Each structure stands twice: as C-alpha cells, then as structure tokens.
Length: 235
Image (cartoon, rainbow, N blue to C red):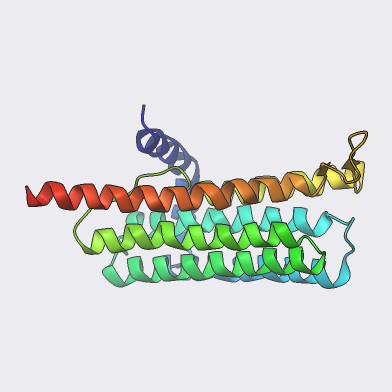
C-alpha cells in the first residue's frame, strides 16, 4: 500500500468521526471560509504562546511549548473541517480553495515565527536554524504542488505533507511539555564528553530537524516527478 492510499484511508476514517461536528457547524451558519479564518486565528495564537514563552518563561520551563503544541493540534483540526464544511454544505468554489491555500500558508508561517522566536530567545541557535530550514521546506512542498497543478500535473508525492507536519510539530511539542513537567530540564551526559548529548528540549527540536530534511526531500521529489511527467507528455 503506497503512502497516498494509506493517507486516503486514514482521511476517510477521520472524516467519519468529524462529520457530525461539520454538520453542526453548517447548521449554526458557519461557512467554510469562516472555519478557515478561525484556523488562521488559532495559529496566530500559537505564535503568541511561543513568543510569551520566550519573553516570560525560562530555558527550563517547557510548559509554553506543550501548550503551543496542543493549540497547533487544535488549529490543525480546522484544516480538515473547512474542506468538509465546503463539501457537505455545498459551498465549494474556486475562491474558497484559493482562500484555504493562502491562509494555510499564513498559518504555517505564523507557527514557525513563534517557534523560531522561542528557540532564538532561549539560545537554541542551531535548532532555530533547522526550524527555519523546515519552514523553507514546508513552503516549497506546497509551492511545487501548486505550481505543478498550474501546469496541469497532479503532484502529491512525498511523505512530509501538511497533515504530517502538523502532527509532528504538535505531538513533539506536547511530549516536550509533558516530560518537562515531570523530569524538568533533564540533560544526558556521557562520561568524558564535556557537553550534554540530549536534553528534554531535544524531544521538540530533533523532530524539527527531521522535518527540515524531509520537507526539502519531498519538495525535490515533487520537482523530479513533475519533470518526469513533462517528459512523458512530450513523448
């Protein structure tokens, strides 16, 4: 079973769970664009939580990271809800699709703004660099798909798409926050090594590093797939 088929099956399972909520939203008069806007506002809230954590928290306080992760997950739910509201409420339109895509990009940019601000403020400089590279990769994953589709090429290849990015950021941040509340600012040292090789914050920053690699690999994979499709169309 390929990745896309697995994602489609998982998506159908999720829709079966959220459809009652979707119907409730439609009943109270929420439009798909309104749901998309709520998602953006929540992601601005994510950035605010990270920034407040940078300004008011200390390096060993991971509670802000955990709460921000929970908000990322909640905001990500609206990414699925808006599409379903449009479909079940017969609100689908070309502008709605464009509006959703544009606000998704803004949402992700605000999220990474908060993450980078937090990491820089608490002197995780290398991790902040990887977070920024993950941001670059995330934008390029979306851009290569959009540009390919503009050229008439269906291009959804690769693993690190937006749902995977949301899950990775949210779960790692929540895990970091929970373990921080239990173990505090844990650091792992190896005898003979003058610096720690692992700390509680690594539960958040290591997945960001993985994302920095995989998003850019996905973007390059989509670029090469588009090239193959163009060459095939010529022949």
